[in-house]
Amino acid sequence: MRKRWLSLAAVGAVLAAILVPATPAMAAPTFKVPFPCNQSWSGQTRSDHSPAYAIDFNRTDDLGDPVVASAPGTVDRVTDLGGTSYGKYVRIDHGNGYTTYYAHLGAFNVSVGQTVGYGKVIGYVGSTGGSTGPHLHYEQRLNGNDIQARFNGALALYWGTKTYTSDNGCSGTNYGTGTVNTTSGVSLTVRSGPGTGYSAVGSVADGATVTIYCQTSGTSVTGTYGTSSIWDRIGTGRYVSDAYVYTGYDGYIPSVPRC
Ligand SMILES: [Zn+2]
Image 1 (cartoon, rainbow, N blue to C red):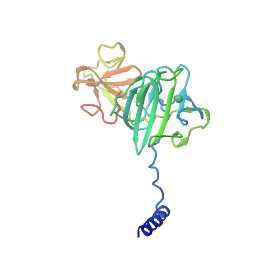
Image 2: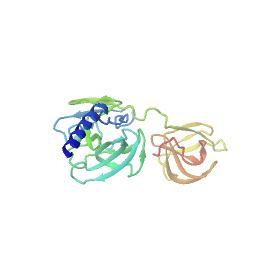
Image 3: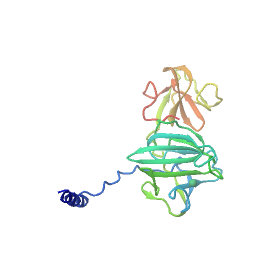
Image 4: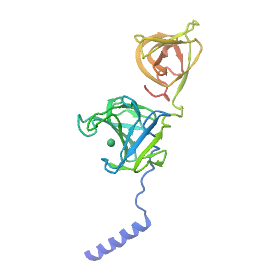
């Protein structure tokens, strides 16, 4: 009886294998090149790399350059292994078993548990850990195993060196707009950082429309729209107090990333 049961089970297993295909991998996220929009980076793959499908990215004078999230997800590791292996690295969980790794970072710009989207700066290129020069060591993994990387669904070059141009965060859909309102016709001072203690680097006319790339917390300012510690980044190294900008929201704009 036992033998017969086993053989029926075996038949059943064979039938199941025929009728039900192996669980397909869940759709992969659309991974993008892990650098800001329009930047071109040289990505190298080599069979003696560890793990084999990792990509080392370089460009001229890349030390300190921002590294961005390849796809939306949740940061689940921000780890410093010291002078060995990955050194300072970030891991992002993209769901469905997919993760990405960003290693040898010089500095971090995220914390564990943080939700990130395309184009979010997660850290800066460095040469920490077992690295002999500045570069980004990048991996895509599925269920913990490294997989051949794809960008916008296209397989990366294995093996060799290829230039990849980023379209990460280019869409602009997560930018916001606002209207400067000082009520007095006086221009609004633009600062180099999110606070009144930063140097003035220009001004925006009363009534002007500004593009808000990201928002962050800084000096509390009382302005046209009450008291707010939110600062809007309207360009590279250009911040204005949100207390003088009409955005349609009392607090942070939901669709705009944090700086
Ligand atoms: Zn590497």
